[in-house]
Length: 137
View 1: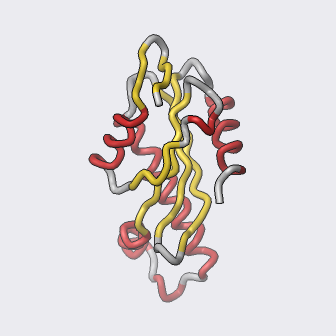
View 2: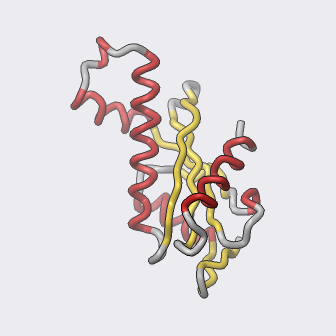
């Protein structure tokens, strides 16, 4: 899908490929159409829990962690890593990411991420992410 980014047209497939080549995320679904906007890129991305667990092991003893605390750490780190992808996005972009599920069968954290031009504003982009979260599994 093509997205209007300020005065430029961006192919969402190119950004999808960039995310998969330059990060540990796998793009499960292009959600640009689901945003119902012509100026927002959105994806459902997954991150392998084993990658996050390595980072958590450096800071905590996993033996002592409650499952709920571990879940929260996974979610936070997945969101942080998703927001680091902003470096790969076009200039003058803003980004919002929300991890929402630990898929234990696949051992992955699912995250919704959305990118737009700064003119859109953080509040509108946050609303788009909230709407997308309501449409996911």
